[in-house]
Image (cartoon, rainbow, N blue to C red; front, side, top):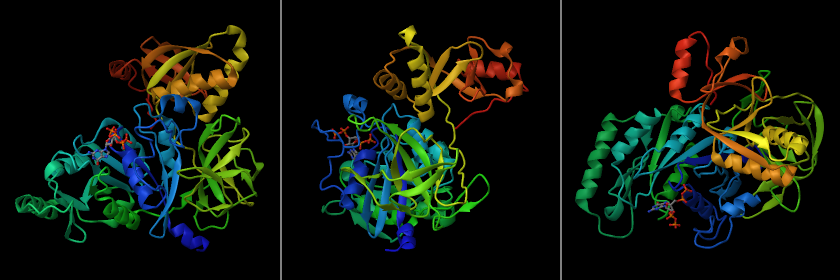
Length: 502
Ligand code: G4P
């Protein structure tokens, strides 16, 4: 395949869901179909102590969960598919959000007995800002679920996205007959039982209703993330997966152009290699103190040993130690194309959001968004004599995006903020293991963070319920005790603009 064909056949996506909706099970089914794994039920090593190979850090092994977002790659029907895994546990983190900045589309898995759950909604909102295609998979059809009409309605009422069912369930749970393919107009049967006509008729009635009152199929609206194609199926039973995958591959986009900070449109097929760092992972291999910068390729072809420039400081770097991520192992690679994720061994050059480019034309992709942390801890070093390593550790870990740092308006009080609890654990573990600095946390709980325009910030605004802080770029932020405190503040200072990050 030549470069342009390879590029056209790339599909890079992430699966978002609330924990337990079936993301891992669906991922396994997809990998299985692509021949990347030989059997299902192995990725998490359920029922055994086998760790998934993407469980990199020691902390992950202690907890048996995947903290980091790994990248899984497989081929199916002439396409090369990159799935960027997003940690699905309650304690997901900012890495999950950042990973969503590096994909071209998203699959949203929803438990059909539960409907849209909080984490799905949160992740959806992050993705939806990007205007990329979102595909919905209502999972666990082999169990009694909610009415499919209700579920589809929730997409519109809770998430505000229009829905277009690609198939429709005929029964569910014990009486699941199959799914009706609404594009090809035929029934895909579940199992080989005799069809129950009354259940089938009921489904056909719903389908007529949908066809009369539902949305039109609109490719453009799908491409912009305004209309979500909806699939029903069961990941566990491996049912509805083929139909999902085939349609997904037809509708999901190949890598797209990105406009950089200087209004240059960078096309994937451009000769010049460009990419951006969306995640940095330290100590993936406990034997080596290495860091890996995850780079999403935007244009051109990556070639082993190529020279690139780091846009932020014009530093020249040779890309000679680069890896790609497979389900089973990390391997060194010689080439990769837009849509692919490469892992560049890093000795401390990279920061999240960095652009790298080959050749002479300077390219600088837009900054990655900052996300609003929700959980906070005051942090102090246990050993006051070790201030230096404490500060060095905080500085580096904050730069990597492990946690966000806030300082009191005056004085040196440090507060760290995170999207998920696990970020604190990773922080504290790494401070101890990598910087030899034991930290003490004083939990200050949940807060609502809002940024202010610097000229409007005034120390008088600060109280225990509305803590005025500085972020790591010295921008003013208020940490509000709760919504009530925020409302009170907004009433008292009607002219002060409170800025929310994603
Ligand atoms: P997650 O990654 O989104 O957290 O979910 P995961 O795939 O781990 O699935 C969560 C649970 O839901 C698992 O059960 C899994 O077997 C089950 N599950 C996933 N898809 C389906 C489905 O289509 N139908 C049914 N009935 N169940 C499904 P578990 O009890 O937590 O794990 P296990 O002990 O059964 O392996």
